[in-house]
Amino acid sequence: MKFLAIIVLSVSSLAISVRAAEESVEFLEASARRRTEIPSGGDFKPDPKSPVFVAVGHGGRILLSRDDGQSWTQVFWGHAGSDHGLWATKAIAYSSGVFVVPIGWGAPTAWLASEDGENWRHLTNGQTKLLGVKEANGDSTVMPGTWGIAGGKGVFVTGGYMTMAATPDLGKTISTFSLYQFKNDPRPRKLVTHHVGPVYCGDASGRFLALGNDRSTENPVFGNLFASDDLGKTWTWLEPQTLNQHCQGYSGIASNGQLVLIADAAGQNVFRSRDAGDSWEGPFPTGTSRVMLSVVQGEFWLAGAKSRASADGKVWRDLPAAVPGGKFAASDRGTLISIDRQRFNILRSADRGETWAEVHTFRPETEHVHGAQGLRDLVFGYVTVQPPGR
Image: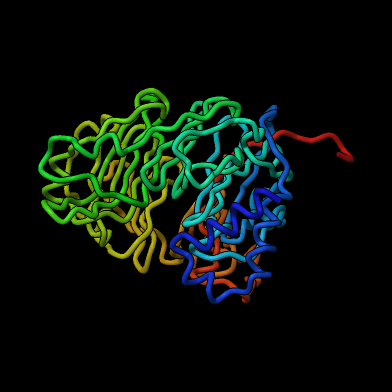
Protein backbone atom coordinates (compact mmCIF):
# COMPACT_ATOMS: atom_id res chain seq x y z
CA MET A 1 0.00 0.00 0.00
CA LYS A 2 3.07 2.24 0.12
CA PHE A 3 2.81 2.97 -3.59
CA LEU A 4 -0.92 3.76 -3.24
CA ALA A 5 -0.25 6.30 -0.51
CA ILE A 6 2.55 7.91 -2.51
CA ILE A 7 0.39 8.16 -5.62
CA VAL A 8 -2.65 9.68 -3.90
CA LEU A 9 -0.45 12.20 -2.08
CA SER A 10 1.40 13.13 -5.27
CA VAL A 11 -1.79 13.48 -7.28
CA SER A 12 -3.24 15.90 -4.77
CA SER A 13 -0.09 17.99 -4.62
CA LEU A 14 0.74 18.38 -8.30
CA ALA A 15 -0.75 20.34 -11.16
CA ILE A 16 -3.69 18.02 -11.51
CA SER A 17 -5.03 18.96 -8.09
CA VAL A 18 -7.73 21.10 -9.68
CA ARG A 19 -8.96 18.12 -11.65
CA ALA A 20 -8.51 15.79 -8.70
CA ALA A 21 -10.73 17.99 -6.58
CA GLU A 22 -13.55 17.21 -8.98
CA GLU A 23 -12.99 13.49 -8.66
CA SER A 24 -13.93 11.19 -5.82
CA VAL A 25 -11.43 9.76 -3.36
CA GLU A 26 -12.61 6.32 -4.47
CA PHE A 27 -11.66 7.07 -8.05
CA LEU A 28 -8.17 8.25 -7.10
CA GLU A 29 -7.57 5.24 -4.87
CA ALA A 30 -8.76 2.82 -7.55
CA SER A 31 -6.56 4.54 -10.11
CA ALA A 32 -3.51 4.27 -7.86
CA ARG A 33 -4.31 0.68 -6.87
CA ARG A 34 -4.38 -0.36 -10.51
CA ARG A 35 -0.77 0.81 -10.86
CA THR A 36 0.32 -1.52 -8.07
CA GLU A 37 -1.14 -4.50 -9.97
CA ILE A 38 1.34 -4.17 -12.83
CA PRO A 39 4.16 -6.74 -12.50
CA SER A 40 7.82 -5.78 -12.58
CA GLY A 41 10.13 -6.43 -15.51
CA GLY A 42 13.88 -6.25 -15.77
CA ASP A 43 14.19 -9.68 -17.37
CA PHE A 44 13.05 -9.08 -20.95
CA LYS A 45 14.42 -11.52 -23.52
CA PRO A 46 13.35 -10.22 -26.93
CA ASP A 47 13.50 -12.45 -29.99
CA PRO A 48 11.85 -10.15 -32.57
CA LYS A 49 10.36 -12.18 -35.40
CA SER A 50 6.65 -11.41 -35.80
CA PRO A 51 5.56 -8.02 -37.28
CA VAL A 52 2.98 -6.00 -35.34
CA PHE A 53 1.48 -2.54 -34.95
CA VAL A 54 0.95 -1.12 -31.45
CA ALA A 55 -1.14 2.00 -30.72
CA VAL A 56 -1.67 3.77 -27.40
CA GLY A 57 -3.98 6.31 -25.78
CA HIS A 58 -4.99 7.75 -22.42
CA GLY A 59 -5.86 5.34 -19.66
CA GLY A 60 -2.97 3.10 -20.58
CA ARG A 61 -4.99 1.87 -23.55
CA ILE A 62 -2.74 -0.38 -25.63
CA LEU A 63 -3.98 -1.88 -28.90
CA LEU A 64 -2.17 -4.59 -30.89
CA SER A 65 -2.48 -5.83 -34.46
CA ARG A 66 -0.74 -9.01 -35.62
CA ASP A 67 -2.22 -9.16 -39.14
CA ASP A 68 -0.80 -6.08 -40.84
CA GLY A 69 -3.37 -3.78 -39.27
CA GLN A 70 -6.49 -5.63 -40.41
CA SER A 71 -7.77 -6.40 -36.89
CA TRP A 72 -6.92 -5.03 -33.45
CA THR A 73 -7.09 -6.27 -29.86
CA GLN A 74 -6.94 -4.18 -26.70
CA VAL A 75 -4.18 -5.98 -24.82
CA PHE A 76 -3.86 -3.60 -21.87
CA TRP A 77 -6.10 -1.14 -20.10
CA GLY A 78 -5.13 0.68 -16.94
CA HIS A 79 -7.73 3.08 -15.62
CA ALA A 80 -9.72 6.02 -16.91
CA GLY A 81 -7.32 8.92 -17.41
CA SER A 82 -6.83 12.29 -19.05
CA ASP A 83 -4.18 14.71 -20.31
CA HIS A 84 -2.83 14.98 -16.76
CA GLY A 85 -2.80 12.24 -14.18
CA LEU A 86 -1.58 8.73 -13.41
CA TRP A 87 -2.90 7.31 -16.69
CA ALA A 88 -2.03 10.07 -19.16
CA THR A 89 -0.63 8.12 -22.12
CA LYS A 90 0.86 10.04 -25.04
CA ALA A 91 3.77 8.11 -26.53
CA ILE A 92 5.32 4.77 -27.47
CA ALA A 93 8.79 3.75 -28.67
CA TYR A 94 10.23 0.58 -30.18
CA SER A 95 13.77 -0.74 -30.37
CA SER A 96 15.35 -4.18 -30.76
CA GLY A 97 12.19 -6.18 -30.12
CA VAL A 98 10.79 -4.24 -27.15
CA PHE A 99 7.97 -1.68 -26.98
CA VAL A 100 7.91 0.90 -24.17
CA VAL A 101 4.93 3.09 -23.18
CA PRO A 102 5.26 5.86 -20.55
CA ILE A 103 2.14 6.45 -18.46
CA GLY A 104 1.57 9.41 -16.16
CA TRP A 105 2.02 13.15 -16.73
CA GLY A 106 1.71 15.71 -13.96
CA ALA A 107 1.75 12.67 -11.69
CA PRO A 108 4.24 9.85 -10.97
CA THR A 109 5.30 8.18 -14.21
CA ALA A 110 5.75 4.48 -14.96
CA TRP A 111 7.27 2.86 -18.04
CA LEU A 112 5.40 -0.19 -19.32
CA ALA A 113 7.18 -2.58 -21.67
CA SER A 114 6.54 -5.74 -23.65
CA GLU A 115 8.54 -8.04 -25.88
CA ASP A 116 5.53 -10.04 -27.08
CA GLY A 117 2.95 -7.26 -27.45
CA GLU A 118 0.50 -9.06 -25.18
CA ASN A 119 1.99 -8.95 -21.69
CA TRP A 120 2.92 -5.56 -20.27
CA ARG A 121 5.12 -4.99 -17.24
CA HIS A 122 7.18 -2.24 -15.70
CA LEU A 123 10.37 -1.81 -17.71
CA THR A 124 12.34 -1.81 -14.46
CA ASN A 125 12.64 -4.78 -12.14
CA GLY A 126 11.64 -2.56 -9.24
CA GLN A 127 15.10 -2.55 -7.65
CA THR A 128 16.80 0.36 -9.42
CA LYS A 129 16.95 3.51 -7.28
CA LEU A 130 16.88 6.65 -9.38
CA LEU A 131 18.36 10.03 -8.53
CA GLY A 132 16.45 13.22 -9.15
CA VAL A 133 12.97 11.66 -9.13
CA LYS A 134 11.36 13.29 -6.13
CA GLU A 135 7.94 11.80 -6.92
CA ALA A 136 9.32 8.31 -6.31
CA ASN A 137 9.71 8.73 -2.57
CA GLY A 138 11.46 5.38 -2.40
CA ASP A 139 9.31 3.55 -4.94
CA SER A 140 11.61 2.24 -7.67
CA THR A 141 8.80 1.69 -10.20
CA VAL A 142 8.31 5.47 -10.45
CA MET A 143 10.28 6.94 -13.35
CA PRO A 144 11.18 10.55 -14.24
CA GLY A 145 8.30 12.60 -15.62
CA THR A 146 7.99 11.62 -19.28
CA TRP A 147 6.47 13.64 -22.11
CA GLY A 148 8.17 11.76 -24.93
CA ILE A 149 10.28 8.66 -25.55
CA ALA A 150 12.56 7.47 -28.34
CA GLY A 151 14.34 4.19 -29.02
CA GLY A 152 17.45 3.26 -30.96
CA LYS A 153 20.22 0.64 -30.76
CA GLY A 154 18.28 -1.07 -27.97
CA VAL A 155 18.41 2.11 -25.87
CA PHE A 156 15.33 3.99 -24.66
CA VAL A 157 15.62 7.71 -23.91
CA THR A 158 12.96 9.89 -22.29
CA GLY A 159 12.38 13.56 -21.56
CA GLY A 160 9.62 15.56 -19.95
CA TYR A 161 10.37 18.26 -17.41
CA MET A 162 14.02 18.91 -16.50
CA THR A 163 15.23 15.32 -16.19
CA MET A 164 16.37 13.22 -19.12
CA ALA A 165 16.64 9.46 -18.58
CA ALA A 166 18.04 6.51 -20.50
CA THR A 167 18.24 2.75 -20.16
CA PRO A 168 20.61 0.75 -22.40
CA ASP A 169 19.68 -2.66 -21.01
CA LEU A 170 15.88 -2.84 -20.88
CA GLY A 171 15.45 -1.41 -17.41
CA LYS A 172 18.27 -3.14 -15.57
CA THR A 173 20.09 0.19 -15.23
CA ILE A 174 18.67 3.68 -15.71
CA SER A 175 20.72 6.86 -15.88
CA THR A 176 19.38 10.38 -15.38
CA PHE A 177 20.66 13.78 -16.48
CA SER A 178 19.33 17.04 -15.06
CA LEU A 179 18.85 19.95 -17.43
CA TYR A 180 19.20 22.18 -14.38
CA GLN A 181 22.92 21.92 -15.09
CA PHE A 182 22.31 24.54 -17.78
CA LYS A 183 20.54 27.01 -15.50
CA ASN A 184 23.60 29.27 -15.24
CA ASP A 185 24.79 28.73 -18.79
CA PRO A 186 26.32 31.98 -20.13
CA ARG A 187 23.92 32.84 -22.93
CA PRO A 188 21.44 35.71 -23.37
CA ARG A 189 18.52 33.81 -21.87
CA LYS A 190 17.85 31.42 -19.03
CA LEU A 191 16.75 27.85 -19.66
CA VAL A 192 13.04 27.67 -18.97
CA THR A 193 11.60 24.66 -20.73
CA HIS A 194 8.94 21.99 -20.51
CA HIS A 195 7.39 19.25 -22.69
CA VAL A 196 10.79 17.87 -23.70
CA GLY A 197 10.54 15.06 -26.24
CA PRO A 198 13.46 13.04 -27.69
CA VAL A 199 13.99 11.67 -31.19
CA TYR A 200 16.55 9.15 -32.47
CA CYS A 201 18.52 10.44 -35.45
CA GLY A 202 19.45 7.02 -36.85
CA ASP A 203 22.27 4.52 -36.64
CA ALA A 204 24.59 6.57 -38.89
CA SER A 205 25.02 9.22 -36.19
CA GLY A 206 23.77 7.31 -33.16
CA ARG A 207 22.63 10.65 -31.77
CA PHE A 208 19.52 11.46 -29.81
CA LEU A 209 18.04 14.95 -30.00
CA ALA A 210 15.49 16.35 -27.58
CA LEU A 211 13.25 19.35 -28.20
CA GLY A 212 11.40 21.31 -25.55
CA ASN A 213 9.43 24.53 -25.59
CA ASP A 214 10.88 27.87 -24.56
CA ARG A 215 9.28 29.77 -21.70
CA SER A 216 11.93 32.44 -21.24
CA THR A 217 10.69 36.00 -21.10
CA GLU A 218 14.00 37.56 -22.17
CA ASN A 219 15.18 36.86 -25.72
CA PRO A 220 12.69 34.03 -26.33
CA VAL A 221 13.41 31.61 -29.17
CA PHE A 222 11.59 28.85 -31.09
CA GLY A 223 12.39 26.19 -28.47
CA ASN A 224 15.26 24.48 -26.70
CA LEU A 225 17.24 21.79 -28.49
CA PHE A 226 19.51 19.28 -26.77
CA ALA A 227 21.83 16.59 -28.13
CA SER A 228 23.29 13.39 -26.72
CA ASP A 229 26.13 11.49 -28.37
CA ASP A 230 26.45 8.83 -25.67
CA LEU A 231 23.02 7.21 -25.94
CA GLY A 232 21.24 9.55 -23.56
CA LYS A 233 23.70 9.59 -20.66
CA THR A 234 24.79 13.22 -21.03
CA TRP A 235 23.40 16.15 -22.99
CA THR A 236 24.54 19.35 -24.68
CA TRP A 237 22.32 22.42 -24.98
CA LEU A 238 22.54 23.44 -28.64
CA GLU A 239 22.18 26.99 -29.97
CA PRO A 240 20.77 26.61 -33.53
CA GLN A 241 20.93 30.16 -34.86
CA THR A 242 18.88 29.45 -37.99
CA LEU A 243 16.04 28.08 -35.90
CA ASN A 244 16.31 30.83 -33.29
CA GLN A 245 16.13 33.54 -35.94
CA HIS A 246 13.62 32.12 -38.41
CA CYS A 247 11.50 29.39 -36.81
CA GLN A 248 8.29 30.58 -35.18
CA GLY A 249 7.74 27.93 -32.53
CA TYR A 250 7.44 24.29 -33.50
CA SER A 251 4.75 21.67 -34.02
CA GLY A 252 6.91 18.59 -34.45
CA ILE A 253 10.33 17.01 -34.90
CA ALA A 254 11.10 13.78 -36.76
CA SER A 255 13.99 11.88 -38.31
CA ASN A 256 14.10 9.35 -41.14
CA GLY A 257 17.58 8.21 -40.22
CA GLN A 258 19.34 10.61 -42.59
CA LEU A 259 17.56 13.92 -42.10
CA VAL A 260 15.97 15.59 -39.11
CA LEU A 261 13.00 17.90 -39.75
CA ILE A 262 11.37 20.43 -37.48
CA ALA A 263 8.01 21.90 -38.52
CA ASP A 264 7.18 25.38 -37.27
CA ALA A 265 4.16 26.00 -35.07
CA ALA A 266 1.83 26.60 -38.01
CA GLY A 267 3.28 23.79 -40.13
CA GLN A 268 3.78 26.26 -42.97
CA ASN A 269 7.56 25.86 -42.99
CA VAL A 270 10.08 23.19 -42.08
CA PHE A 271 13.76 23.29 -41.24
CA ARG A 272 16.10 20.41 -41.90
CA SER A 273 19.40 19.15 -40.58
CA ARG A 274 21.67 16.80 -42.48
CA ASP A 275 24.11 16.38 -39.59
CA ALA A 276 21.83 15.27 -36.73
CA GLY A 277 21.15 18.77 -35.44
CA ASP A 278 24.53 20.49 -35.62
CA SER A 279 23.44 22.79 -38.46
CA TRP A 280 20.07 23.71 -39.95
CA GLU A 281 18.70 24.86 -43.30
CA GLY A 282 15.45 26.62 -44.04
CA PRO A 283 12.79 27.76 -43.88
CA PHE A 284 11.32 25.58 -46.64
CA PRO A 285 7.63 26.28 -47.37
CA THR A 286 5.38 23.21 -47.12
CA GLY A 287 2.36 24.52 -49.00
CA THR A 288 0.07 23.60 -46.12
CA SER A 289 -0.63 24.44 -42.47
CA ARG A 290 -2.09 23.05 -39.25
CA VAL A 291 -0.68 19.61 -39.82
CA MET A 292 0.96 16.76 -37.91
CA LEU A 293 4.42 15.47 -38.79
CA SER A 294 5.12 11.75 -39.31
CA VAL A 295 7.70 9.62 -41.11
CA VAL A 296 6.23 7.09 -43.55
CA GLN A 297 8.70 4.70 -45.20
CA GLY A 298 11.45 7.30 -45.16
CA GLU A 299 9.24 10.17 -46.35
CA PHE A 300 8.10 13.06 -44.18
CA TRP A 301 4.33 13.45 -44.12
CA LEU A 302 2.44 16.52 -42.98
CA ALA A 303 -1.17 15.44 -42.53
CA GLY A 304 -4.10 17.77 -42.12
CA ALA A 305 -6.77 19.46 -44.19
CA LYS A 306 -4.25 19.49 -47.04
CA SER A 307 -1.66 16.74 -46.67
CA ARG A 308 1.80 16.93 -48.20
CA ALA A 309 4.90 14.70 -48.36
CA SER A 310 8.61 15.18 -48.97
CA ALA A 311 11.67 12.95 -49.20
CA ASP A 312 14.14 15.76 -48.58
CA GLY A 313 12.19 18.42 -46.67
CA LYS A 314 12.64 20.92 -49.50
CA VAL A 315 10.35 19.73 -52.29
CA TRP A 316 6.80 18.89 -51.24
CA ARG A 317 4.08 17.06 -53.14
CA ASP A 318 0.36 16.61 -52.57
CA LEU A 319 -0.77 13.42 -50.91
CA PRO A 320 -4.04 11.79 -51.98
CA ALA A 321 -7.08 13.79 -50.91
CA ALA A 322 -8.32 10.81 -48.92
CA VAL A 323 -5.35 10.90 -46.51
CA PRO A 324 -6.79 11.66 -43.06
CA GLY A 325 -5.29 13.93 -40.44
CA GLY A 326 -3.34 12.49 -37.55
CA LYS A 327 -0.31 10.25 -37.08
CA PHE A 328 0.86 7.42 -39.32
CA ALA A 329 2.93 4.28 -39.23
CA ALA A 330 3.81 1.89 -42.06
CA SER A 331 4.43 -1.85 -41.96
CA ASP A 332 7.17 -3.75 -43.77
CA ARG A 333 4.58 -4.43 -46.48
CA GLY A 334 3.85 -0.76 -47.01
CA THR A 335 0.46 -0.85 -45.29
CA LEU A 336 -0.45 2.48 -43.66
CA ILE A 337 -2.21 2.93 -40.33
CA SER A 338 -3.69 6.25 -39.20
CA ILE A 339 -4.77 7.40 -35.73
CA ASP A 340 -5.82 10.76 -34.35
CA ARG A 341 -6.40 12.13 -30.86
CA GLN A 342 -9.75 13.56 -31.95
CA ARG A 343 -11.30 10.33 -33.25
CA PHE A 344 -11.96 6.93 -31.75
CA ASN A 345 -10.94 4.64 -34.57
CA ILE A 346 -8.05 3.24 -36.55
CA LEU A 347 -7.87 3.62 -40.33
CA ARG A 348 -5.92 1.39 -42.74
CA SER A 349 -4.72 1.86 -46.31
CA ALA A 350 -3.09 -0.78 -48.52
CA ASP A 351 -2.67 1.52 -51.55
CA ARG A 352 -0.39 4.33 -50.31
CA GLY A 353 -3.25 6.40 -48.96
CA GLU A 354 -5.58 6.43 -51.97
CA THR A 355 -8.34 4.65 -50.02
CA TRP A 356 -8.90 4.01 -46.33
CA ALA A 357 -10.99 1.56 -44.30
CA GLU A 358 -11.95 1.70 -40.65
CA VAL A 359 -10.49 -1.41 -39.04
CA HIS A 360 -11.11 -0.68 -35.36
CA THR A 361 -13.25 1.57 -33.21
CA PHE A 362 -13.62 1.98 -29.46
CA ARG A 363 -15.79 3.88 -27.01
CA PRO A 364 -13.79 6.01 -24.57
CA GLU A 365 -14.62 5.99 -20.89
CA THR A 366 -16.72 9.02 -20.00
CA GLU A 367 -16.33 9.20 -16.20
CA HIS A 368 -13.48 11.18 -14.65
CA VAL A 369 -11.72 11.84 -17.96
CA HIS A 370 -10.73 15.08 -19.65
CA GLY A 371 -8.89 16.00 -22.82
CA ALA A 372 -8.75 14.20 -26.15
CA GLN A 373 -9.41 10.48 -25.66
CA GLY A 374 -8.43 9.29 -29.12
CA LEU A 375 -5.24 7.33 -29.73
CA ARG A 376 -2.08 9.40 -29.29
CA ASP A 377 0.80 7.44 -30.80
CA LEU A 378 1.62 4.25 -32.70
CA VAL A 379 4.61 2.31 -33.98
CA PHE A 380 5.45 -0.72 -36.10
CA GLY A 381 7.91 -3.34 -34.90
CA TYR A 382 8.56 -7.03 -34.29
CA VAL A 383 7.66 -9.14 -31.28
CA THR A 384 8.76 -12.38 -29.72
CA VAL A 385 6.44 -15.24 -30.63
CA GLN A 386 5.19 -16.92 -27.48
CA PRO A 387 4.68 -20.70 -27.27
CA PRO A 388 1.06 -21.88 -27.64
CA GLY A 389 -0.86 -21.80 -24.39
CA ARG A 390 1.40 -19.32 -22.63
